[in-house]
Length: 125
Image (tube, rainbow, N blue to C red; front, top):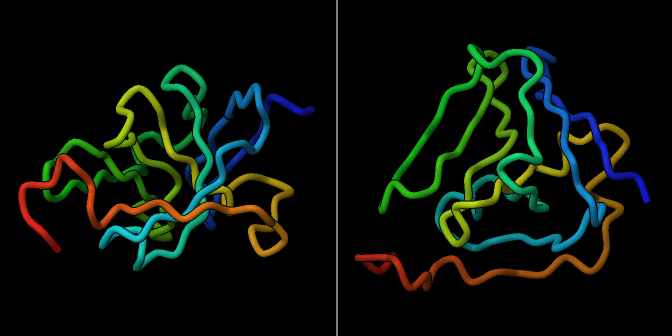
């Protein structure tokens, strides 16, 4: 099982190296207001399992609601690459569509997470 993966945004300005000891594990979609709109499948990496090797200055961050999660995207092409998770701030959620050699449309066994009813929400969507 491959542990180290390369990932990038669409234009290539942002390049990541991921350490995924369990491979593409814990694949999921979420139905919160943000994830529902972007339709991304994610996997997880520990905070030290993601390294930005190029384009740190090209990354923008977006936060909303409780401002716990930090959603990163490329300021040039707009692609969401990863986010620091609200449900587990010690992990990043990685957009699997950004991982080299992965076609998200070929993935099976993708769980759906109930992000609408997150217990940390102070308001209901």
